[in-house]
Structure formats: C-alpha cells, structure tokens
Image 1 (cartoon, rainbow, N blue to C red):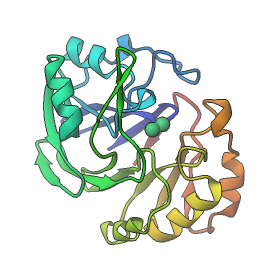
Image 2 (cartoon, rainbow, N blue to C red; image 1 turned 30 degrees about the vertical axis):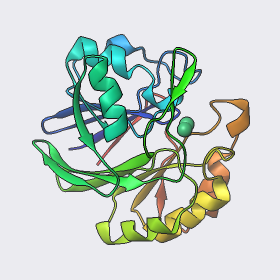
Image 3 (cartoon, protein in one colour; image 1 turned 90 degrees about the horizontal axis):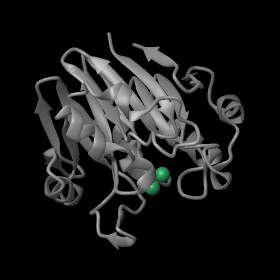
Image 4 (cartoon, rainbow, N blue to C red; image 1 turned 60 degrees about the vertical axis):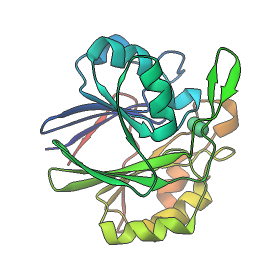
Length: 227
Ligand code: NI
Ligand code: MN
C-alpha cells in the first residue's frame, strides 16, 4: 500500500515498499505545517521539485540528519552536494529505476532560483515528479502554470495527481481543472493554496468544477490517502 500524507502547502510524506520520503519538505516557517523536521529523521529519500524556499524548505537539515538521498535536478543537486548531502541528480524528461520504484522528472513552467545568503543562485529548470510505486502512479506537479505537456501524462495512467490551484505563481482553479482534463488522473489532490495571501483559492470550488468521474480528495494537513 502507498501512503500519501499531506504536510501543508506542497509538502508530502510518502511511504511504500522500500520508501520513506518527503517531497518539497517546507515545514519550518510554513504557516500550514503541523509537523516539524524532527518527525522525519528516518526518511531515505527527499524529492525537491525546484529551488524556491517554500519547496526546498528543510531539505538540508533533514537530509543531513537522516542521510537521505536528495533527488532533484542537476543544478540543485550540485548545490546540495556542496552542502554535504547525498544526491541523485536527474533532469526534466529523465527516468530512473530506483530500488523503491520508477521516477520520472516532468516539466514545470516556473522558476527555480535558490536564495543563498540573500542572493539568488541559478537552480536549473523546475520540474515535477511522476513516481511509480507498487504499481501505482503518483504525480506531484511542483509549481507550474498550465502547459500542454500535461497531455503526455494521460498515457501514464496517473492514479493520484497533486496539483497546485493557488494561482498567482502557479495554475489557479480554472487552469487546474484544464490540467485534470488533460492528465485524466483517477484521484486529484489540490495543493499550493491558502498558505499565503497571494495564493488564496477555494478547493471546494475546484472539486465542484471537476467532472464527476474524477475523485477529488481535499486533504487536511496531516491527513493521508492510502492507495
Ligand atoms: Ni516556486
Ligand atoms: Mn511554491
């Protein structure tokens, strides 16, 4: 069984055979988060979609303490390696078979620079992750605008799509509905909304606008989905 636990904003904890992982672990300073980094010191992988602070979050601290391997784009991987972390660099469009499952990095239309000591450092291209775990497919879109590339995900037969709906920096509700029409996932979970003033959105409006055959799961912080 694959467990997908929402930690607030775009952060998730994933558990499946051979995998205890975080995605975009923005916990410290996340107004929505109810868990701290200390709860995740036994993770073995951390996925980072792009270099923005609300996605890198506590990656360095947790990876240092746990020894987890950080999976990110090549440019972020270099920065994480310089910080002494174990890394597995990938890039957009690339697929790799890990011991726990298959990982594909997907495109995202966004930025990825990293703020280091008050300066912005290039963080490569932003992405998302398509994870194949125990025969199930989970897609974390990262931060992205609507893009026709999402049509390519239909052939992957996504079980769970974690999609931003907050607008301003990413898709809003209207565009996220169009994304669902392209991806055709079995289950959709709205993410990246209501954390800050600029990304206010109503997940129930999103649910109402989606076709009936799509199961929408509006997860409370701390709540898990088991598939
Ligand atoms: Ni971002
Ligand atoms: Mn973000």
